[in-house]
Image 1: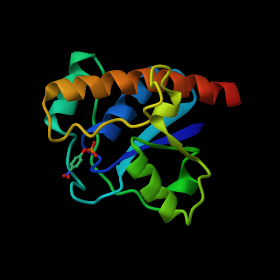
Image 2 (image 1 turned 90 degrees about the vertical axis):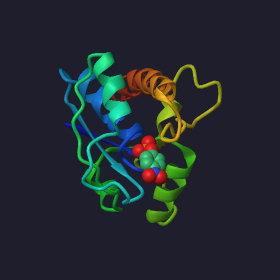
Image 3 (image 1 turned 120 degrees about the horizontal axis):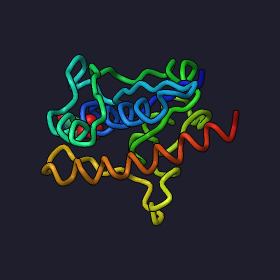
Image 4 (image 1 turned 180 degrees about the vertical axis):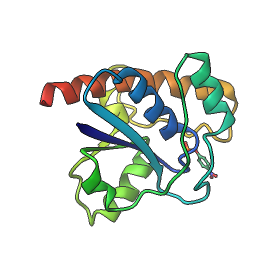
Length: 151
Ligand code: 4NP
């Protein structure tokens, strides 16, 4: 069983979508995803209502309670997937500079055009959440293919 952790800042908008889309697409595979945030502001909360709306629109079940990322997660997960470069650098610092198990989600996006950030949609409208969903969906396909190629 390969274990994947999606990580953003608040763990209410982007990374719960990563977790939900991954578990939906990989349900028949020997893989499982969870999610966490580098900040603790929203610990215990459900995903943002706009993430829930976008997931439901695409038929993807979503259910999560926000939790804070901790350094021990590098040992518990085979793949720790950052939504943006800030998240990546914050986690790298917690690992004392090591990048073992650490990736940016959009490394796996065939349409990234060199932009490796999933933008934070929190202060925008629902259209930003739809864009995030599309980026996450493309990238998760690439990530699943990558994990399968390593098995
Ligand atoms: P997320 O979005 O990192 O995708 O969950 C955010 C949610 C909340 C905040 C920032 C980003 N916040 O500052 O409360």
